[in-house]
Image (cartoon, rainbow, N blue to C red; front, side):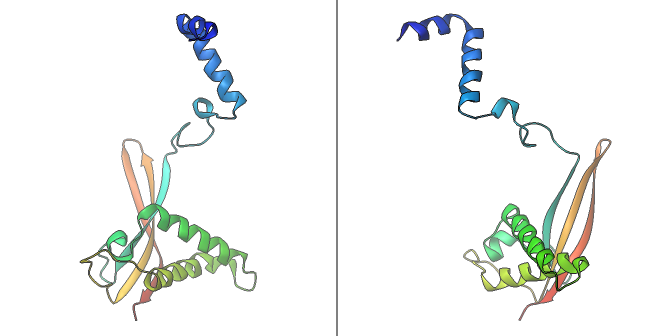
Length: 149
């Protein structure tokens, strides 16, 4: 062990300072991160929910091979693409992106073995959740509904 390492080992404060300086030099900001997953938690979040025509939840991982987090990102990307299309009204971007996502799920489905076929109708919902005191309050908004061919 080098002489510098031995000295740092005997002084924990110096070791901490050395680690912080090494992190800053390598542009690793973990302890001082501005990213919400490390810094703070917001009292608001949302996720995507897919149901059948009777509003029973459809397991996207089993039926389509896609879990909830990638599904949300896929919806965000399709809505942004729909918003960029200036030939359509911007108010319908969420609905157009949602319909596109449902059609994509049906076309590119990779169901797990033993999964049931998709129901005759699919609905895509946006579920907003927020903290209200000590309770979590959720509201749903249906973005799209399609018939399964």
